Length: 410
Image (cartoon, rainbow, N blue to C red; front, side):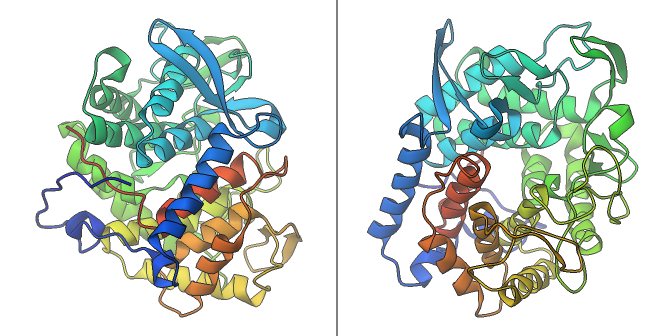
């Protein structure tokens, strides 16, 4: 899968993969050969990126422009294109050394999603959702997309070096990251009416906001907290913001402890900055464990794997795996109240995937059962699972095989 770039370490770098360059291969620990693991990853990649466009793929070619080929990742069941999926696709392709696909996705994002008009309230951000013809469903951003764009671009700089224009990966990572923290409070018209847009972070709490819109930016989404990324930004990002991101990493680690249920380890989709569930708003799922919050365990487990700064993340992984094991390894549902009452019963591939990644931080022997569960799961193909579950599935294969790595930018 390639070799990791040179990492220069120092005090405060923890004792995880950033410092050691060693990434756990949980599949190999369970007895699977390197050949089997490579074949499993390549099969998932081929199906999701280059499989049958009617029944398998989430990656679609979209022609060319002056910057080269264009392609997008589609949320197939909802017939749209989201910064979430586009940035996940970029992360997957940089980890797999698939530069052509990475550049095609980035070119599409810059061509159709990036908002550059100076008078626009979202200038410097990306429209979070488009129709499949490239026209926007909304002209405001969702911070998880920007977070993954930034980190994927830094990694691309490390793997391939920096090109010109939109392919100067590091320059664009710096630009987006700076905008996330320093976007001015700006009101104006969009195609969907007036909007007032601010920064993606709450300066007082040092946390990522749910959205930068003033009306919906007063709470957060636990699955948007990415301390493993923030530690990298504290080393690689614009110098004036590095202390902020270092503090944000510590804040998110403490937040995971407050936002998760002390018995089940379940986090809500949305939370107040003090960690209590956010109730109300536009989603009836906001205060319970649902689709967004599947990813929260991945975030703390990868943070532990890369940095090993907070042993509490190990306890969180053991706790959430104990809960799902108690629900039946092959039958647990996908939505729960935080105290563990079943709401929806679909045994979802995406949740199987994120529960496997939690094993990067877990200590209980049952962690191997969760790794084997994702190994034995089919590549998501059903319409309801192709996009979200499919992307979480292939990322879990990378995480659990030690192939989701840090690539220091050039």
